[in-house]
Length: 583
Image 1 (cartoon, rainbow, N blue to C red):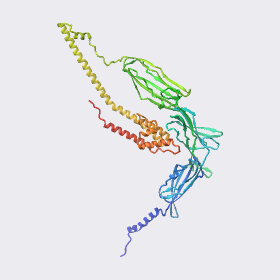
Image 2: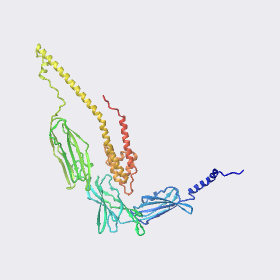
Image 3: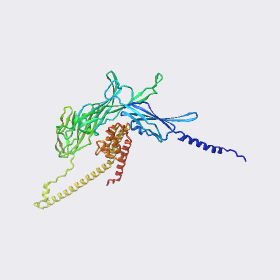
Image 4: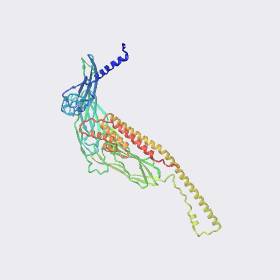
C-alpha cells in the first residue's frame, strides 16, 4: 500500500530543522562575542573630555558594568549603537558603547577589564597630563574662570558679594557653573539674578565673559574658605567633509575649568557693640506708620505699623520687635511680612510688623521710644535706629456696654428708715415705690436675657463661618506648599545642589512653620528615614572635598509624598475629633 505525503507530515518533518536553526542562531558558543576597547585621544589633559569606545562583535552575555571606569574618571554621557549586516549569507552583529569621560587628576591609570556578563573587555591604559593653572590668563588659554569677592574681610552675618567670571575665547554651545561650596555648612548663599554676558580684551585677545553673582552671609567667625569653583563648557568640534565644513558632521567636546580658592577673614562681633541683636549693614531704617485720625475711643482698635529696612542683608537675620506691655493697652501683633529684594549689588531686606492696639478705657497713653542698635559697616561703628515716644488721647466709648440705672438713693434710704410715720399717705407712697421697683427689676432682667440670647446667636453664626475660614487658610497653605514643591522640582531637574538646598529650607519653613529649620541637618532630623538620608547626602555633597556630580535622586517625589502623608494624617485627626455641640 503506497503512502502519500500529507501537508501536515511535511510541517512535522521541517519543525525540528527550524528549532535547530533558532538554537544555532542564539547559541553563544557559535556566536561568541569579541570585545575591543579604543581611546580617541591618549594622552589626555586634565579637565578635558575624551571618548572611550567598547565594540562587541556578536551577542554579549549581559549589559556592561562600567564601575571600573567610574573609579578613575567621571562619565559625562554614554551612547550605544547596534548594527546587523549580512556577509556571504552570514549575519554579523556589532554593538558599540561610547563613553564620554573626563579626568580630574593627573597620572597614568589602568582601567580593569569591563564585564559584559561573562564576556570581558580588554584592559585600557590612560595617561592624564596637567594643563596651566586656571585663574591666570595667558595668550594660549582659551578658557579659564575667576572668583572675585567684594572684600577680603567682613563681620559675621555681613554680606559678601562674590562674582564668578568664565572667560571664553572660542565658540561654545553650552556652559554650566558648579555650586559654591565653603568650609562652613551654615553659610547662607544666594544667587543674584541671571547670568550676565559681555565682551572684553586681555591684551589683544578677545574674550566673551559669562558672569554670575552671589550674596554670601557667613554665620561663624574665622577663616571662610570658598572652595575652587568648577565650570563645564561644551565646545563644538568642527569636522571637514571635503573642502567644505559640514554643520551636520560636528561633535561636542566637554571641557572643565577650575578657579582658585578664596579665603575671607570673618570677624566676630565687636566688644563695643552693646545691642541685643547683631545687625551688620551699611544702612538701617526704622519707620513707623500711624493712623491719621487723631480721635481714638476705648475698645476701638488702632493699627500701628513698624518697618525695618536694611541694605545688604536678608530679612531672616533682622530681629523681632519686642514691645513692652502698657497698662490699659492690649497689643496684638500680626505675623511679620518678610521680603528679600535681590539686586546686582546684593540683597535688601524688609521686615514689616503690624500691631493692633486696643485701649480698654479712656485716658492718655504713651508708647515708649524704640531704639535698635546696629553696626554701620560704612563707618565701622555702632549706630542707633530710633523712633521717638508717642502719646495719644483716648475718649470714652461711643457705645458703652453697661448703662446700669441708678435708683434714687434718698428713696431707698427712706424705705429702710424707721423714722417714717406709717400714715395712709406714706403707705400709699411705699406701695407705689415697691411697685415701681418690681417693674424695674423685671425690665432689666428681661433685657439681660435678651442680651444673652443675642450673644448666643452671634456665637452660633461665628462657629458656622469658622470651617470656611479654616478652609481658606488650608487653601493658602496648600498654595505656598505647592510653590515650594515647584521650586524643589525645578532645582532637582537641573541637579543643582545649592538651589535644591535653598528650596528644601523654604519647603521646611512651610511644613514646620511653628519652628522652621535653619539648615539641612535640622530639616533632616524632622523627616522620615528615607528622605532624611537623601537630604544628609545632599548636605555631604555640598561640603565635600571631591568633585562628585550630585544627583537629586528622587528628593522631589519624597517631599511630595511627605506632603500627602501630612495631609492624610491631619484629615484623620480632624475626623477623630468630636463635632462641637450646637444647642
